[in-house]
Image (cartoon, rainbow, N blue to C red; front, top):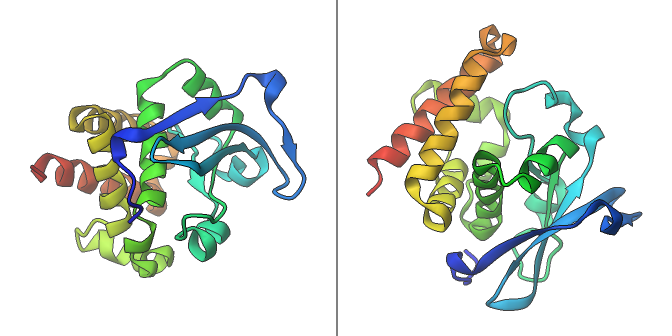
Length: 196
């Protein structure tokens, strides 16, 4: 766990004219997350429609931690950290959409607790087996807990309930993966409600 106060995280979004293209990352930087406890700490918020376009039709945010960097380099204080999203996600954040702010802080939580994450959950097959057994992946519990501490538990529950409802109305709901995603939302909501 990073030894930064959760309440000291801040996110900043850049106007279109200030979004620089990073050739090393092959992405456009559109914002950043900082923490007042360490002026050198940064999580880059990057636009990459290609990386997230496979989920572009899903009715909830498409934020993701860049898996290679997150899994292999994301635990140390000086390592490069990236949250990848698409343009519609950035637009929602600029509009101060509360649900999308919750989703962003959930992703920040993955970095905050990066050294406590269960690496087995990066294996989708294992992850879905656990969800079928009614177990919430530890990674998601920690990230939701972070968002709840930063923004308030009721805000996080409300956002998850909204995404759950939107997904229930989606045509993707009836496929096996859709049903597993719905189940994971339900388990995460129940876990937050149970947590004191």
